Image 1: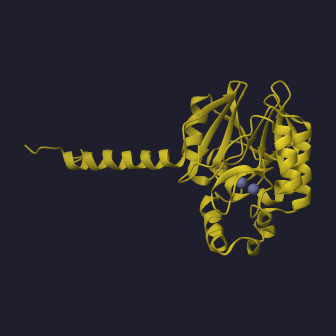
Image 2: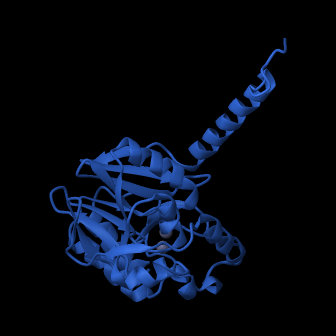
Image 3: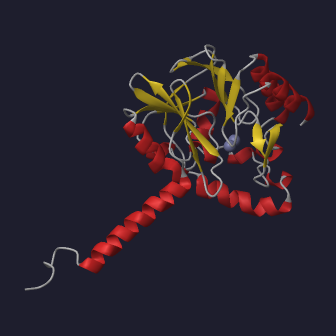
Length: 265
Ligand SMILES: [Zn+2]
Ligand SMILES: [Zn+2]
């Protein structure tokens, strides 16, 4: 009698299957950290290779979760798994439509929302038409267009739109145009928490180095002066914490730090 029935995997085949499953899990782990609870009802998944500087927020919402910003395409399995464990993904709300914020959205199987001024880009090229790559330093001019392509999940279908003051899972929509035409933040008065997408950066996008809060890079802004005014708008809310679309939050002296970023960067 043969060691293994013909339709069952042999020992070495089993090992290969286990190894390839482990490799897939390792790759997925490399792309995203497990969700971390950052405030009442709010969770953060950090993703992207190698330094996990893409932030996706999961907000508990009527026994399900609302996703705010969808990170990059490779984060989709981690976001889907976390969403399923937390009762299912009710909806995805895009802070804005750039490739690194809509990337996982088409793979999550939930209705997707954004601001009306962002809709055409979310359903189109992700804002690529106003990027000015010539404003980047030479090394980044070659690299970043490739990264954007790799991060993107492609155009999404927008199920509906949200505007200033709309309520989303206990937060209110705040319009912060400039970096993108219809960028939005979410603001919760009760603990003065803001989720701010790409309103400001605590990261230099051309080197990957973390640092002080600053304007988003002009190469990716529709209107840098409007982006500056939007930082001041968030500062004036006097937040206790602001959680950006990339890298680290600001959790102390927030108003002064944001005012300084608007005035000096
Ligand atoms: Zn952006
Ligand atoms: Zn971004």
